[in-house]
Amino acid sequence: MLVTTAMQKALVIGAFIGLLPLSAGAFNPGTPDPEPPPPVGDGILPPVERVDADGPFQTTIERNTGPSRSGWVVRPTNLGEHDIQHPVFIWGPGAGTRPSSYEDHLRRIASHGFVVYSEVSTNTGREMTAAIDWLIAEDARSSSPYFQKLDTTRIAAGGHSRGSIASFAIGSDPRLSTTIHVAGGSFDGRGSANLHKPAAYICGANDRMATSNCRRDYTNTQVPVWFTVMRGSDHMGAARDGLPIIVAWLRWHLAGETERSSMFLDRNCDFCGFGYDTQHKNW
Image 1 (cartoon, rainbow, N blue to C red):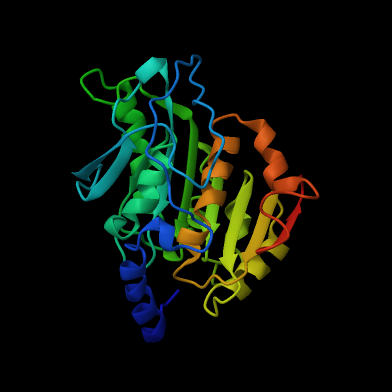
Image 2: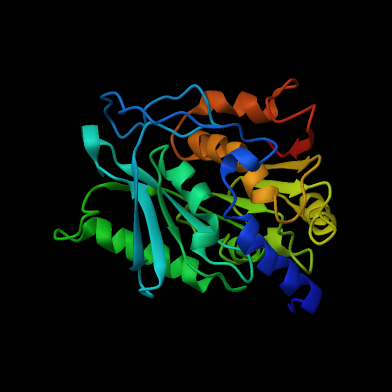
């Protein structure tokens, strides 16, 4: 699966675009300062009214960490506060980019109570599998800052462009609860064959690189799948423009907020209609 020279140049541009403030995105208004989370129990995340704004947790970045010592963990600063066990999200950057290209995105997700791991992507997704192994081991290691702070029964993988390809590659991992694929349809149309859990495909109407592959993947997908094409969004902007969708999807599938299914599946769903061309099946 080769990446053309034109694709490589475009994806390098994405490193710059990924550093733009979230308020620059068409679907991401400015965000208020986060508030302290209210006390909750049973590992359930504090409820929020908005998925297009920062959540209630302050965030911390740990760099040069993970099994490769080259990954990032972006997480709530006070892990385990109020006896919360945090769900885990593994994020794969696009080709030619690094976790730093998505810092604002990763902080937004972590502010909602998720522990997010990211490192440079490969087409095989081996780095994602290694990250899952590492975080599960850290949760069990008594001297680790993550000791008994993670909910290792609630893990998702997702990514942008090549990171989406990596997420397809590891989609059969039984530890995954869901996968998220942003502007990254599989090159051969068979990526969805690996999937065994619900998936979200988030693509841009102005993306000439990936959206046709996204459509083919949707057609071939046999698991419950939700697919949207965001109007006015291109390949580089899709991760930013799709961030509210990612947060809502994770809160549904990892945080147990089943009421959020209406945001995706109802006739008048939040991510349908104006700004979105949305389909779903197999639910």
